[in-house]
Length: 237
Image 1 (spheres, rainbow, N blue to C red):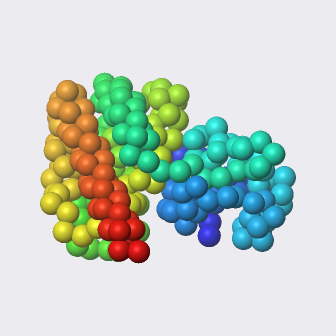
Image 2: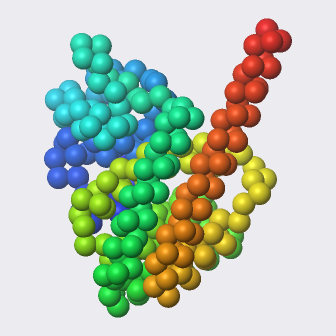
């Protein structure tokens, strides 16, 4: 059940049992294996993750600070619920942070940054053309977005972006449940890539804004369809 280190992390290998528990829990919350609103009982998690109670409690406290888990005092912890308002808030703040980090990256990115971006886009394009499985495409997608920001010289901006990216990804995973979505993700990535490589900062930021907003729109559509199905089932009950 262990999570895969994110390409946004320069040093993502767990150094302690708390780090290990934190990474596994975070990955499972983002992937939806730990459901929104679910109670997180330490005794149950000990057997599930094969980690002691103290590292688990420390990991849950870190996840609470990151906005993935709610601490309920004596009642323990639970996964943060999902809502339309929360998605909209995360999306708006992610756009603010990501475009600022992108501006910084495009201003400061050197030849190594450019080489990393070209390689990441090439890998992503091949996978989006139909090669590889879902996990490989997701990994390549993260690597592409990480490459775009890799020239940013603000560690704080990058840490903030990493948290927002993962919070947004938790919702984005819902949008992947639907089919026949009228969206050309590769074209969205191409617009970001072309503008970034040419150092057209305003164009790159606008293409990024539209890309993130489109993800929110698709996810909201899934939410609305699910709510309609629930209302229909309730009427028929």
